[in-house]
Length: 319
Image (tube, rainbow, N blue to C red; front, side, top):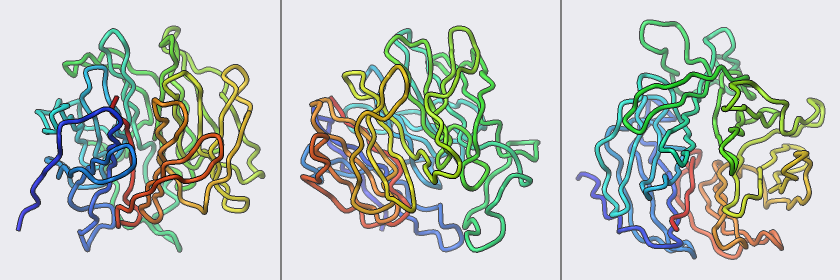
């Protein structure tokens, strides 16, 4: 029996979640790509089974024309879903591990490259946390990627390459794993997941900026997700396997944490700030739970289960 998609036309407040079914016994990052549609209270409305994907679907974001974008960074697929709920013809942006995007008012796209380095910096080839998948080398190379930011036209033409600093994260090979553009479109803020830095890159002057925030290495603090809210506020999910995970609101000028809400347990790794200004939708990578959080109280007021562990890798709100 084949999977049948029943995604509905998007309505204001809908939440879209990337939660691939990891049903490939030979690869714990591979399986049937799936995007689930919920209403604003996390009641299921429909499911899209993605075409042309083989591994984790991630990095959901709506463009300015209300198309939903998503990524399979391991088979180099960039996915577009129209507002009517149908997957549309995808653009080939080249054989790189793109996993996130920012959209400018001019129609340009800024794609973040998920992987960086080669086997020499892969800390997960052996040992107790041995990677259960094979990271692809770019064609005709022995490298996973360069961890850069790339500017494209809407038709897929490469316009600029920005050689961005990255951290590698705990496994060593993570480049730009999430990105967000500030309101005046002068910089892109980005992270290497499970690293201790929130980076900034000046796309006007084409130069690395001072970090938005840097946590001391011995603090145990790591950044796992970032997002601007629709009103311009900036939030992150801070991961600390000693003191817990927290939703943090930052000062836009200094990067300093202004408010911090401890989250219920570890694993919260996807972040979407609601247009209502009162709620944040968070996804738990460890257990597959989606939570609708009150920003004021930090409490979960609605939740949904995707029923897949280590798969939930993107949330976006339609409005």
